[in-house]
Length: 59
Image 1 (cartoon, helix red, strand yellow):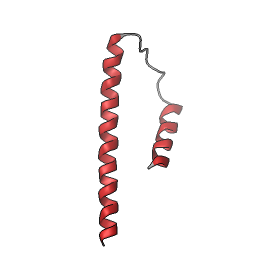
Image 2 (image 1 turned 90 degrees about the horizontal axis):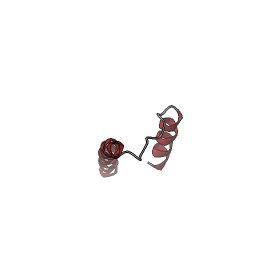
Image 3 (image 1 turned 180 degrees about the vertical axis):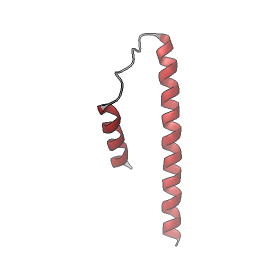
Image 4 (image 1 turned 90 degrees about the vertical axis):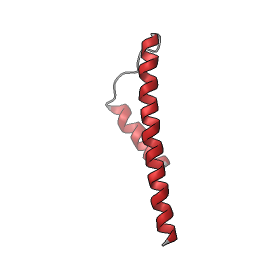
């Protein structure tokens, strides 16, 4: 899992947009929404991977 996250961070930072201007209050709301979405995706992926590993162990 750690390797996957490292690869994701490297690939997203290479061609990713510039860091947002966090001085304006509106940008905090936008960044919060992005981070919540990313967290939900990561949690869903983690649950799916954990469940598939659990099924393999039980067989």
